[in-house]
Image (cartoon, rainbow, N blue to C red; front, side, top):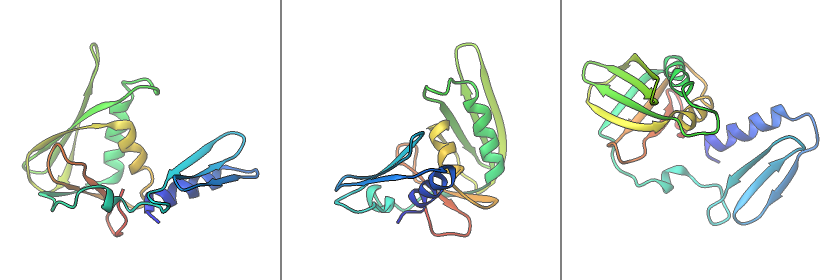
Length: 165
């Protein structure tokens, strides 16, 4: 079972103090109580391994960054946006190990810089909300981003774990 799905299910189960209804079919597993629900998609009746969903391309860069610093920077960026809208955020990796994270609206802008281990230049646009959801499921102090290019999804990996998000 993919680590992301496992952690999401565990968070759901910990939050619920009532009976949980579980529905399973060939396309999804759905966990629900009276206040919340969690749906995990299935591929051919099984939980997908994200490595089979994304083309296996050797990453051109691997970035090690403080999980707390990255979460804080993304929270600042996402604060510009309403909770129900996309949160477009630019990650600018710069040689010398500097990662600039910025987001803007017509009247406001947020920009912050954190350091990382690695050295290449690349700008990637992400949705800060989705990125935060993935990062909040990781335990530890460091996270590894395995990046190919600006148009290819990247893997988010806990530092001391083979699981990927």
